[in-house]
Length: 188
Image (cartoon, rainbow, N blue to C red):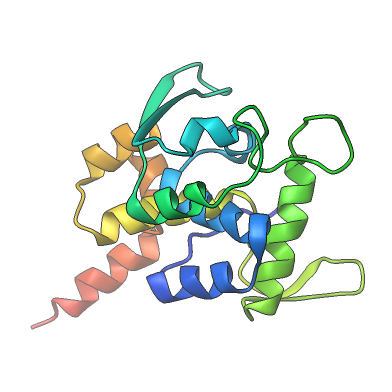
């Protein structure tokens, strides 16, 4: 599977979000607001965020507990959530109180990316045109938003839980080509 990229602008994120509706739209909203891996994002329950200013989540991959401050946009969306506090935000329609699968989340996000015009899919749902989009695009777009907002590389590394600057640079879309272009721009 190809490595996915971050969406580069707030307008692109908004376009992706607007290509989806209801719970599916919330997948982009929460994903880009929290920067969680999809496996953690799907475990969020209604009571974790509805009426809360902060919530804690133990990351499945690292075991680290992250404390996430809920922004205004998420607070408004969480207030409108239906269901009991114990219900998953992204509840599956297939099982008793289970979240959707990561595969289903990928399908939802990819369909939205196609409607937003970021990708073109073939008859089997594979990307044939455009940048690779996937569930990790949410987390990478969160990192990119932090970078564009002026957060330093060490701050972004800490927030994302990365152990190397190289990984964080890849997340936020700073490549060797970007560095080379920057040097060329200083030609005097």
